[in-house]
Length: 451
Image 1 (cartoon, rainbow, N blue to C red):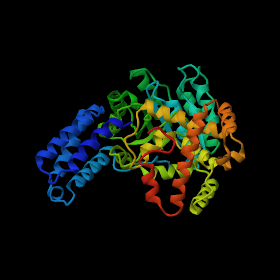
Image 2 (cartoon, rainbow, N blue to C red):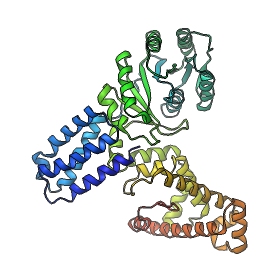
Image 3 (cartoon, helix red, strand yellow):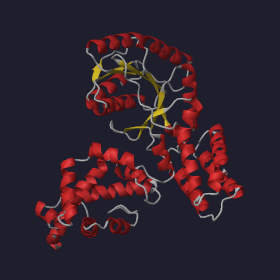
Image 4 (cartoon, rainbow, N blue to C red):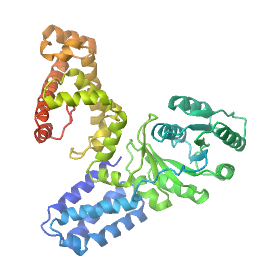
């Protein structure tokens, strides 16, 4: 989401880092670049002004100018300002009430509200161990109720049925009563969206607010709409007692301005980011982690948490034992690592969070990388178990058979075997304690990828 902003900020701050001495003049020049970068990222103008003033007042202070590493001190100032801009820390949902805790979802049509309802349910079920009931109050959009029912089944949530000929207020009352009877911890209410903010829409959702008395009223907004997302959030916040925002489609080509502006403009925290289409693609919003990613410093903590949720621990321990011995790493292990990368959100998600890697590739390069990864898995799947364990036995006729079985060419098989040999060599270095040698050998690239 922040590729362009990250690139501009990194270039500007790198230039400052190289200065032997910082002055008000070279800081002012750098801040002009930062200002342009923020405006190009579609950050609201008042927010940019506040941010730049904050950074300037601290960057020209005595602590920075007389620091032994003034360039790094400025980076710390920019990092702190970004964190403050986005809300200091993660704000959790306030569910410590007598059940059912009601969460009301609001937003425009097409913002991803229904999908976010299901994602939030899955998050609460899997990570918070809550029993969740879903209900749709969207009686206008064709098949909206059926869509939510299908998603509820996928994520393991209870579903309260409703009909298009019912009134949203009646649906809300009945669902709330059923949630009490069934002892559900949380009731999430999906509401109707509109193509634009209008009076009947706001009146309907205000009525639902009054009936349900929700502990959380979350505004779901599409980050791809940029400045419009912030303006719409502001209008909703003036009409409803919002408690937070879910920013969707942040894995797309959005410039990121909404994430940096919405807290400052509305005074309401971003609580979650939608980072993909699947029902598990919802992340709690951590301002400090996102600030780190924006400045190209990665987000190791989120990466570790993601790995803990998705990694097969038994396989991970087996691989660790192999690596510690410096031997035994085979093509099945290689395939497992590629599949694990896919489970963790693919190449783009990993590169965004890993520090020290070069600038994130563009969309076309990432698409090529994903195809390459799928091709590698297909080639390994076409091998026999013996070939996966002992790649040395793969010769001419075997290569032709593997290529035919995977829909690839013999040169693709050769390329895989060469990449695997390089990976095996690095694993041996790692096993002998040569972590630095292994990282140096990667040269900032991911194994098997064209970047």
